[in-house]
Length: 235
Image 1 (cartoon, rainbow, N blue to C red):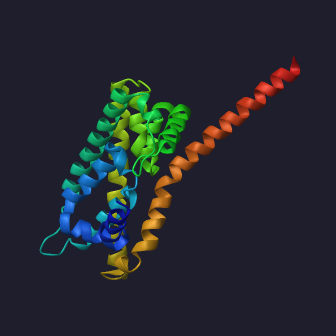
Image 2: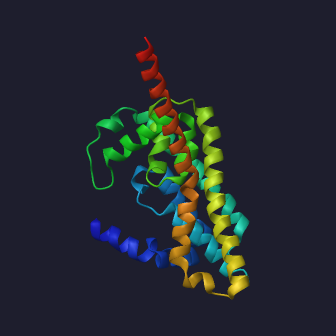
C-alpha cells in the first residue's frame, strides 16, 4: 500500500505529476480528486490546493492550443464535486456518529485527524465548514464531524455551498488569471518555469484568512479569560 501511495504521489501528486494529470484527464480528473478529498475520509492526503492552482495554470497555458481546457465548465463541475463531496462526508458522520471516534487507526485513517477537525468545529461552529476548506486535512474531516455533531443539515448546506464554491473558484481563477498575466508580461512558458514557488505562495495566501480568523478567535478567548480573572479578583 505504501508503495502504491508513493507511486501515485510521483505520478500524479507532485507538481509535475499534477500537471500531467490535468493535461491527461482534464476536468474529470480534477473533479474526481476534489470529490474524494472532501467526501471520503481516505482522501486527506490528496493535494487539493496545489491541484486547483495548477489546474488553473495549465488551463491558461492551453488557451491557444488545439485542445484548450475550458475554464468555466471546469470551475462549475469542480465546485459541484466539492459541494457533493462535503455532503457525502456529512452523511457519513450523521450515520456513523460517535463510532468514528472509537475506530482504530489504520494506514488511511487516523483518529487524530478526526480529533483535530472536532476541535476546529467546537471552536468555530458552522464557520468551520467554510474556513476548513482552506486548511488541508481538516477540510476532509470537518463535514463528517459536523454530521456526527448533529449540525442542522440546511445550515450545513449553506456553509457547504459558500465554502465549496469559494475555495474551488478562488484557487482555479487565481491560477488561471495569474498565469495569464505573468505569461503575457514575461513571455509564454514563464509560469511553468517557476511553478513550485508560485504554488506555495498561492497556497500560503489562500490560508491567510483562516489564520486571521484563528488568531482573532484566540484573542477573543484570551480577553474573555482575562475578564473572568478580573471579575473573580474584584469579588
